[in-house]
Amino acid sequence: MNIFLRVVMPGCIALAAAGQVLAADAYPSKPIRIIVAYTPAGTTDILARIIGQKMTESWGQPVIVENRPGAAGNIGTELAAKSTPDGYTLLMGTSGTHGINVNLYRNLSWHSLRSFAPISLVAMVPNIMVVNNAVPVKNVKELIAYAKANRGKINYGSPGYGSTAHLSMELFKSMTGTDLVHIPYKGSAGVLADVMGGQISVTIDNMPVYLPQVQAGKIRALAVSPAKRSPAAPDLPTIAESGVPGYDSGAWFGLLAPAGTQKAIVDKLAIETSRILKLPDVSRRISELGADPVGGTPQQFTALIKSEIAKWAKVIKEANVELQ
Image (cartoon, rainbow, N blue to C red; front, side, top):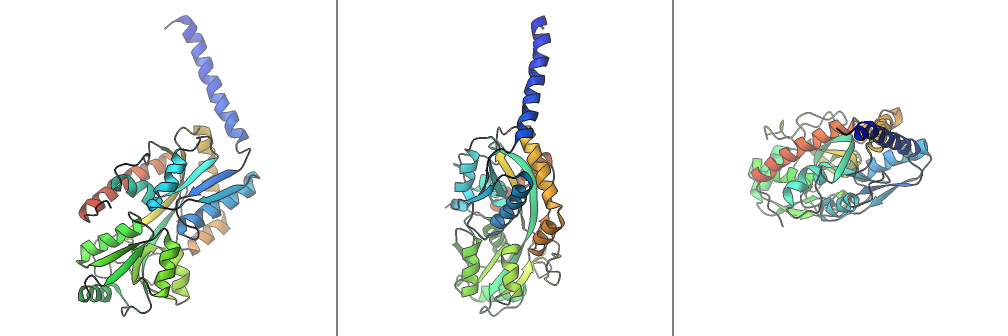
């Protein structure tokens, strides 16, 4: 190697590293926005606002949650992917946006990993199966029998085509031989309103949105969807326990930045997110919603996204879900 390069290059690398540290030390120096690719009041929105509020308190800069719903989360996710990678635009990603959509949509302008810098997993969330109170069933076995006796006459809602709720129901249909009609919405809030109102018969969706209404007696819960029961509703059986052996479906939520965001800033955000999730009031609030606060490193979150892409690719193929 040229002697000039041997002398100068290490200095340049050191200066670049020092620049990143200085940038991270000064971050944030202006408001941050967290894009939520779904409507307000859903699980993604609730978690983003919890994290954002605590970041505001800690850093003294406003953290603004911006809802950009539509196209199963693709609209808001694309906006985040194309934003300036300076740490001031973040995305609260989900198993839907980053585990499912990359398998379901062929013409996306972004990729779950290549277009993003994963920051930290925020929460793991069980799905809950609920019905409106007029549906004459009290457990999963009765729902299966009722659906088979009324093939094609019972609808289910989801917060969007290709969402975890949609594919969770399609997996349920495939494993039980039932025929339920899918009604897609632009978010969980609309599904919840119509389940309570009687326009939607059943859904499997994120527990935090539905559990308060279950506890208030406005809708009826039949089961939870993961392989294990939820501490938030320990008396509710799993779908697998209720006559559908092997059924397992849940959701996760995590913070991401656009690809190219400085590693020092990503690391600072990851450390802050994990700190927030360990705060007693935050942990308690998220747990009361039926979610499990997690945290962790960018590397751990990246590994999860890779595994989820592989998992949902298999579910989509086995459930024979086609693009619309």
